[in-house]
Amino acid sequence: MKDKTRLAVFASGTGSNYDAIDQAIKQGTLDAEVVMIVCDRPGAQVIEKADQNKVATFVFDPKDYQTKVDFETEIAQQLREVKVDWVILAGYMRLVGPTLLAAYHGRMVNIHPSLLPAFPGLDAIGQALHAGVKVSGVTIHYVDQGMDTGKIIAQQPVKIEEDMTREVLQRKIQDVEHMLYPKTIQQLIKEGE
Ligand code: GAR
Image (cartoon, rainbow, N blue to C red; front, side, top):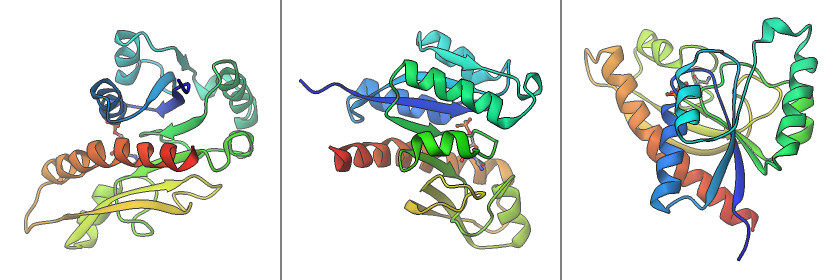
């Protein structure tokens, strides 16, 4: 039998997308294994989730390193040790630098809560509400050196109703994310076989 595709999930916060990936694996709709969680915020909720699932974690504080190259070199080393096939950014609120990009080019994807190229960067949901658009959504894309600029793989729109609160829009967007991310990762894995 073929070995399972080995994923590393990078996250900075709650980790609800990590949860969705984990659920899809447990339900058998995603044929992969999460072998490491990488987190740049000690104390983030996602670490607890990884511990509960007995998944290895690499947690670091960027302040403890002089440069991005320093901490990314260490991350790359950790990923190599556990033989990671794909890097999945799921709420990793940091621009990936050349060290990791070189190591995982074409095998690193990100999820973003807007229909890119609209509203890249921080607080995409707030940006959409502020702009008054009637439709926003979710984008999954390859990671390149830019801020949410890599080649788009999948998108799904979410309608913004009149007077919709931020909380409601965020929940709708996250519901879409939790479905779309595992499904898209599974497609990428299949295409790569
Ligand atoms: C997700 O909505 C993701 O799209 C967003 O952060 C959230 C993380 O939630 N990412 C970005 O804004 C990246 N620019 P989670 O920790 O519950 O998965």
